[in-house]
Image 1 (cartoon, rainbow, N blue to C red):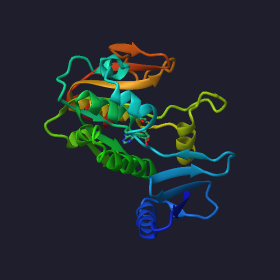
Image 2 (cartoon, helix red, strand yellow):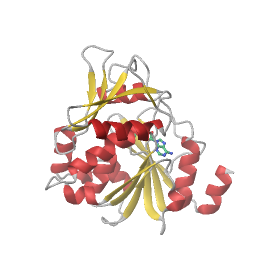
Image 3 (cartoon, helix red, strand yellow):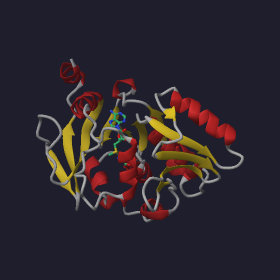
Length: 258
Ligand SMILES: C[S@@+](CC[C@H](N)C(=O)[O-])C[C@H]1O[C@@H](n2cnc3c(N)ncnc32)[C@H](O)[C@@H]1O
């Protein structure tokens, strides 16, 4: 994988540190790469320059659609929050696929304490950088404080005592020609060689084995369910569906992964 890491004036040492961290995770710093990760005054942004106009991904939680969604209460109406059911508002939940952090933030804005994992090194850094910037925003700071973001594969077994519930939103292969693929997802797809998370079934089994109550899997509305078990119920939105699975306990999780 190749990616150009570029520094705005004054950010050379930050870019150097970023290059080293990404190289340690298998990235080459290449001049001819399609993707540029730029560090500067506004934090990190990912840019795809081989298309015109260039595509930019800059996560800015206080602004834009996400900021609006967080500022205007109404979290209760969001399908994801309804899928979590009647859990204590300050309970601990897991997000096994943090991605661009939209669901993580929604859960934390609702009041949950969230442990979230992201295994893609560039996606993790974009999100960690955006969370760090949002932590200084007066309204968002208390929300950000409820989030623990970890780099790597989701490890529900490492969470003790077990969390109440978890959400899992694996990548789903989009049809290449679908016009509706959002710009930020186009960038993420360019970043990831494989646009599916092939170990989704094992992740679901591990989560079900190590949470107290339920796991919610987010799927495109008409996609098949993940794995062999039918979900106990589904909450449907306009374009996505939240499939609900009850917790199984550790024994079944071990059997599923072994
Ligand atoms: C569809 S995106 C998630 C989008 C996210 N729900 C949001 O609101 O922005 C899927 C992400 O989950 C990550 N992922 C998938 N399986 C994972 C796992 N087992 N552990 C950690 N990260 C995972 C992928 O790297 C990818 O960035």
